[in-house]
Amino acid sequence: MHTPVEKVDVQAVNKKENRSLYKKREKIQPKRATGSFRRLKWIIMGITLAIYYITPWIRWDRGVGAPDQAVLVDFQHNRFYFFFIELWPQEVYYITGILILSALALFLVTSLFGRAWCGYSCPQTVWTDLFIFVERAIEGDRNARLKLDKAKMTGGKFAKRFVKHSIWLLIGLLTGGAWVFYFADAPTLLRELLVGEAQVIAYSSVAVLTATTYVFGGLMREQVCTYMCPWPRIQGAMVDEETLTVTYHAPRGEPRGPHKKNDTWEGRGHCIDCNQCVAVCPMGIDIRDGAQLECITCALCIDACDSVMEKVGLPKGLISYDTHEGQFDKTPDKKLKVRLIRPRTLAYVGLLSVVGGVMLFTLLNRSVLDVNVIRDRNPLFVTLSDGQIRNGYTVKILNKIHEDRRFQITIEGLPNSSAWLQVEGPRHPEMIVPVPGDALSSVKLFVSAPNSDLTDSSQDISIVVKDLINGQTEIQETTFKGPK
Image (cartoon, rainbow, N blue to C red; front, side):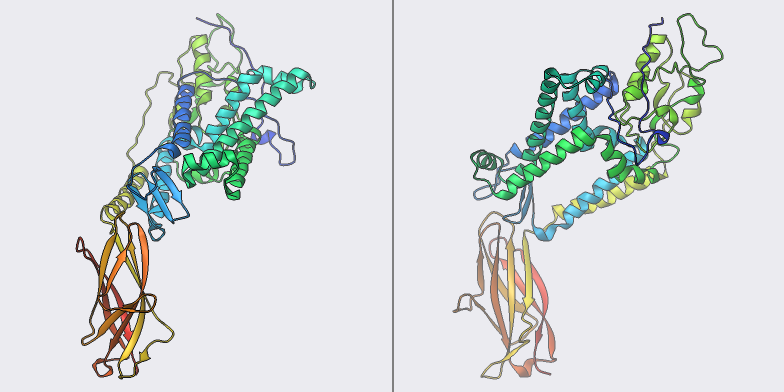
């Protein structure tokens, strides 16, 4: 079977020899691709966009007085909520851990499958795909868009461009709007935005994100990946000869050239030089030139080439995911050899396990009570009228649960001492501090002791804070200062 294949008149504008820093950018108009990888990209795009747009609207009951938004970065009350997890500012190390885990996961995926993140899940790729989909729906496929670009401005052309850019701006607006919903109660903020009652920072954030989404996804596209993103330059250190990447099998494909029905395949390669792989590439490169910094391994060239091989009656896989060694194999029906377990991947898995295990352990064992003690530095101590030495401390008690609690403060390590709390004037010798749920209370603590009982000018003591309901205690070490 031999079905005629159209040869596309296209050049790889991002090819090293064709790219100049002083040359005006040539707009890339990728052709529509069909196949398994294109379907996979549609599925991933749908899932990632759904997660991004829907997540702020998911509700999660945390009890009375607590926000019911599942994922919320609450700057006003210094909280980060993620479903059943609530993080305070002093627990920012969890965010650091998440970033480390994300980086290690990216390293692992890259070492296994090359730039799979860039080709399928990167926001720049996802939104660019969405913008190209809109452009294709309004202006047609590649040839129609090229023809429209060259045509003079008419009413029809203006209408198409106006509708296209309007939809792009709407997508940008929805993107910026969805982003700000992560930082406030989504239904409330939406109403405020619509009636003009939201804060200036909300409107400005939406405006900035609308503009960046429109520019990056609609106008700059591949330039963001080529010139702005550092990952193409970093990922070279993550891959090795066993990494799966999108590869053109030159020994099988060369020498390339046109092929007519009933022509023999003897003495020539399987590549018919139709340029279909170049036409579908959103980065404007020719995969037949080998590994390139610009390639995001979106695999659309695989779909294009497989459809051509099917039309000319040859085995698929002239362009495919393969290892560095596998690209030199001439066998059309060769079995892909993948070695997932190797020192590099084991190292990444090991690091992921260690960091993830530490984070999980600390999360499961995190205390719902946090105490911070700050000793007065000016003056270091005060000599009372009866000769006793007094020190002052600020005790901050953080109650991380959504219930009111009462805490008792006691002093250890200083015999014959007396202690009291001072809140707005009067003494509170019972040393009981009520703390509302999910709140921080700060009290002034005074401790005095006879000068004769002090063994040194600085004596170690412990301030013990005990929850009177569940008995949980938190001990803070500090010092008691006196004269030399």
